[in-house]
Structures are given as C-alpha cells and as structure tokens.
Image (cartoon, rainbow, N blue to C red; front, side):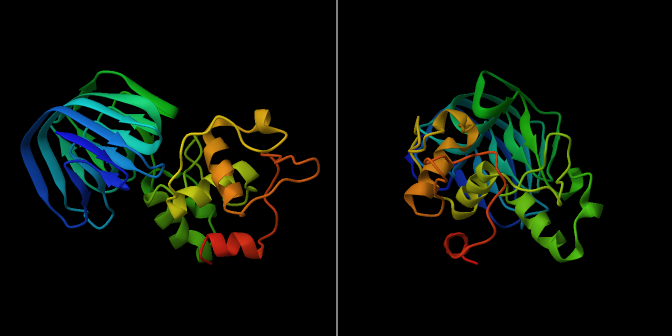
Length: 254
C-alpha cells in the first residue's frame, strides 16, 4: 500500500468516526508520505475520533515506513488515538523525523487502552518519539483538572482530546500559568490545521532563540499576519502572550 497525500488524516482508513471493530488485518510494506503539518498518520487508521468510544482494533499487523516533509503525529497502527481499545497488535514500521510526535503503535493516545501489543523498528520525532506510545493526553491523565475553572473545564477537555492543547510532562495542565508566545503560535497552528512546509529560519532577529518545536508555526503565523515582532524585530518567544487582540481573534475564529 502506497499513499502520498496532503490530507489531515491518512491511513488505510483516514478517520474512524463511528464505533467499529477491525480485526485480523495484515498490512505489509506500507509506504505512506504526508505533506501537511497537521496530519495524523497511521498504517491502519490516521485518526480514531472521540465519537467512537466502543471501537476496537484486534490482531492488527503492520510493516513498512511512514515519512513526511512535515506532519503532526504518526503511529505504526494509529496516528491519533482518542478513544478505542488496541489489543494483540504488532507494528514494524519505521517513522522518520518529519513528525512532531512518533510512536511505534500509536503516537498520541488521549483516552485509549493498549494491551498485549508491541512495536519494533525506528521512530524519530521532531519533538518526541516513543517505542509504543509517545504522548498520552486527555482528561484521565491530567492530574490537576480540579484547578481548572468551571467555565473552562469543558473546553480544556475537548482541546486535550483533539491534541490542540497538551499537558506538561508531569501530567498537569496548569490553568493559571501564562502562555508563552511560542506556545500560542503552536496552539493556533494545531487548531487551524494549517498546511506548513518545513522551515529552518524565521524572519525575526532572535530566530536562534525560537525553539525548534515552534519555529514552523511561528513562521506561518507571521506570514498570515497573526503575530509580529517587537522592538528590533524580535519575536521574544518565551515572553507571555499579548492581551487578546483583533488579529488573533480572527485567526482563531473567535
């Protein structure tokens, strides 16, 4: 199976939106290339959405390679796993460094269960890579949801499940912590699912201070007129975000 696509969700099945059971499937020598920054890519399924709580993947075997000029998440079996059960599966899929997150079986796991499954081969992520799963998100794994104001709780849950908003490495969401200008650009890019090409530099004088995980998103947000430099054309990536303004509100469809 060979796929070269600019779709947001790529795999034998791009998206699973209805509850389903897939069992006893073997995919050999998959060759998948993604050409869009927001892509979720898996050998079997790109995205299992949060509307499929009773879905199950059982006895799935995938071999091959997943590559990208740039992409968001890639897994040997599922790219982005919101809610589903994976059991008795194996993946032997090489994933290259074009993806922000790369996991052997599933890249992003919001609230799914993975049991009796294993993965081999090499995973390279621009930000993180893991042998079986690299990022675990979602309500069940955020340890400080009790500190989130009631008016924001539903939005935080939805954003976590869709991978627009991630917790910190210690499992917290830190709702009262300010957001840096780098984090703001990344969240905008995820929400808007912009098509982005890999870039090595931005137009800002302090480009060397911009973290690699945010450089592409900042570059595209600048091109779209949603962010701008400060004195001396510096982006100042670690500074807190400006108060909400019209440009950002338009960019986020607020």
